[in-house]
Image (cartoon, rainbow, N blue to C red; front, top):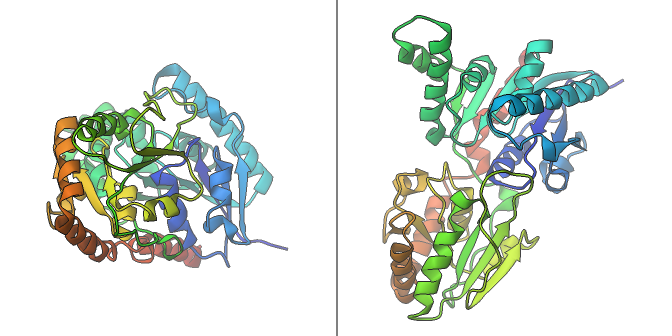
Length: 386
């Protein structure tokens, strides 16, 4: 009889994004000999194709009513959605009966049903935070209830604010900031940088002819409109070849960009299966996201030896990369500035090649086996002490 404990991963997001990729890469490093994994997801196809779910002791199940469970972000309808999702989770927990851990793959606001279930059954919650969290008392409370929190450095400020917001509503203590700091400095809070698994390491890009590459979802904050405006200006001066790979978000109330559109010398690819091949046929990666929490697609571009164009917006890669050394920078949300950066990069072959060579050096730091070691160690240690 198999008495191994079960870890349940909750993922209600209906489309593929960096948080799914990062979480699945981290889970690939976790031991399976002493535990089993069950993924409850709105995107079953993505998870079934991951290396993590190719393991014998990992099962993937579709989350019923998924498209109705993430339509609202606050208010009464939001809470109705969360309690419905909680009841669905209870069904799966009852079905498997040996669930000892719950993993949130996005952030407390999206993974709220895990904390509702935690209140009912006292099952341990392990939370991933892949971006800024909302200024919410309930989110702050979740962050104080989680047994472990693995978060990007860029999310720390918003997490602090959420925790402060929660304690302000519950106590009369004046120095709330000290309480928030104590939580964030606890041993079960782990600052974690994303990495790329060896099995997913990108193919080296071509170096013969300059070709641009953009890859992201069509959510407005990803900035596709800025790229289109910049390319149209640049195309008036010289032809620029471009590959655009986009993911069309499903069941979201957030604003999205239109794609494909008429744009010269541009090839459009909707959620292509051969993304790595398309990337390898390009060599200039263009990031237009607004204050990207991390930018896994930027890391993947660096790992393939591409010259990356990034906004000078204070985000993670803006702090880590240097203009004209391992990247080219432009003013954020400014099509004219991006247009100049595109023309500069496409015309200055020596600069582009130098950035490409240095990109490969930077990328070596971000191997998943190193970056997610704390998470794997945590999961392993919990098994040992259980």
